[in-house]
Length: 575
Image 1 (spheres, rainbow, N blue to C red):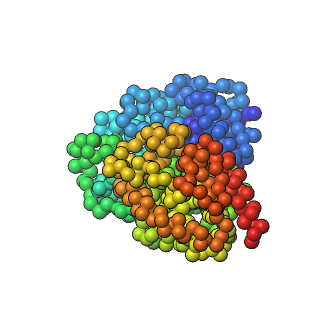
Image 2: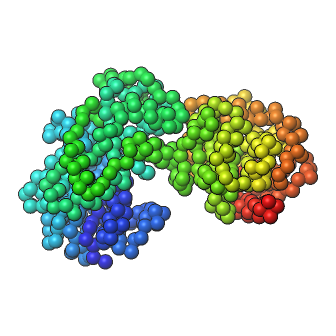
Image 3: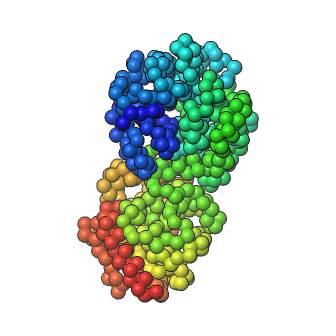
């Protein structure tokens, strides 16, 4: 299919979202990627994008002609260059090949398009720095210097060849999939390893939200007056760095640092101590930027930035959901919410779920994802306070569970695993009218206390140093990638201590829970793995899953889901 727009770097963070925006505007788009394009097409499928007007082509901007086919690109009007080598600490030659030579090659290729309307080149907001016109690879680092040189090169070649060029200079673009730069600082804040803030109280690290930015880019060629212009695209209302960090700390329920380390001192300290790439220090500035042309253009296109606080909080949820790029994020909706006294990581339907899931230890709410994908109604789950992605607890898990379920207007099946069977049982005992049925999966208080987590004096330091593979082995689970998330969570400040303390405390309540079980008024059913049986017989209905151990929801989600659907049907008939 002939394309009227080409997006170079279409497999990247900005490029792929720009492809989506152009397709939604009804354009025929050629997505140029450096590779097969399989990752892009999978991502577009996950986003449920209509790709009937999309063509994926291979490109290499380091080569004259870009390695693009001529067939299908004869009618191209708009060329978007989102391709760049974005990384810190890279070799200068590698950076120049992509960010400088590549910028020139794009302009030269575009100049040969007979129907060319516009080239949109993405540069960076630091192009307004005092020394931006004289890039210094030693002073600025390879990435920053090459972007500055590439910016000048693109402008020069466009003038020489008569190419209509528009340059967009964005600040940090935030959205799902952005794990570089400011994301590193957010990661340290979340892990509790950010003792002080870099710079001073007036440091300004502006951001711009991804969806807004790609809508801005897509609108540029449609306006003749934007040709030859440069736009600084950033949110002027971005808080100063201390205020930004305080906002995100409050959202995640962690402590914000109050001390500062001057930039000049950071530059002198060894990287092993600062954990900061020297190239990132040039972004620590109090500079402000003239965004009036961009704001005027956006207003003419009826584009409006989302509130910066909402954008930052949403991006933080995306970062934590993906463990800063370590794992794939679960299905939305997800994010931090206030539940009683605790900042809590919540996933799913907050009003009318058919099922509510509580996780055991040392796993998290995502341990139920294989089951939630297979049941017949909406689901709600959360990381218990003090565990997983949630903040340290300020209230008991019993009080938290009351607050967590208070907004619900449905009467769900309450499903708990291992450690959480205790809070779930006590809730069902005290609030029988709020629960349709109670399902206890591998209830620890009815099984032998065999876990090394409850017995070993070295449990805490061992947990802190666990790899996903070793943790999987110790829990009798296959190493399928899921445990990358819980392992990352266990390395947060105090997390391993809280896990071990909770398990040992729960061990002392086993007799009380056994005594309380017969008094529960709602239907109660048990699910156990054949390799992790109950310690003694019970009169309650028990479903035993063949070849499963203590975590049947992870190893046998189909069987667990089928049983839960049957439980819900029986409960619905009883209501």
